[in-house]
Length: 211
Image (spheres, rainbow, N blue to C red):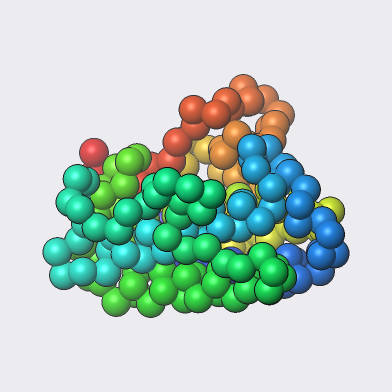
């Protein structure tokens, strides 16, 4: 069965839709817990931004990242442990702007690297399409978390969700609505006829034709 490839514009579309939804939230809601995440919405957006940033960095060099090679210190001591932190006094727009920036970085890198490129991820060595799909799924899943905490609506279109779902979760059913299926695949929802997934869920980073 043929499938639609995931590319840079899909990542840009995901962050654009997420930014639009987040901008509709009241400022006071950002202190709320971000859905199932164990943090508030400010920290959830920082988490998302740093995740996307890491995807771009791993695939960007001519010799892509391998596990254990020293790079940025991702976990620093103190109240602000991540590399990318925005000033909360500037309001949520600062973090939303960073989301658009790092989404653009992922999009540019995945479309620039050859299909043969591979880079480490804890769930398998990903190719550029895999990192594009990771960028889409990371964004949409945490957009769901943020939308729950902020009290705003968020439901991405099926034609954005389905290709990333098929790329990262080949075991997922193909005859169900893509958005609820992605939420089920990432442990965020139930899907009729399928066992609910726990926090140990994972995706398939490596190309589907490789082990």
